[in-house]
Length: 130
Image: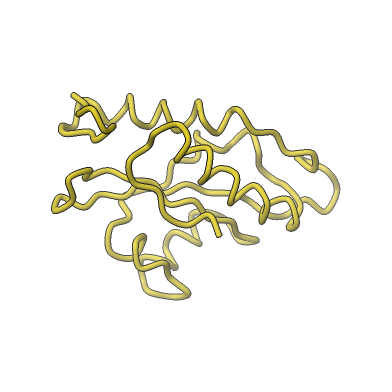
């Protein structure tokens, strides 16, 4: 179930929220996708904070490392976003797989664009994207 403001209030609605994030990300394209020297990746992390009115959220980041390694770094506190460190549940590679890999300059641009697309789509809690 979802409240009027887009907040997911039970586990069964989570797949619909993730699908909404994927649809928002699919509106974007990477011009350097799979080009030579395309060694950066965007990643999206599912966040959960049961204390928030909107308990599920998304963190958008970019990295030159494997996104799985970068997620592990966040969780152990190395160059970590406080949101991923405290509330990160898992990576959602299916949300941005159509964009990866890409060049550094475009990864920086699309990191912000994906976060903005999530906000414009009405996703209730979005972090990162800077």
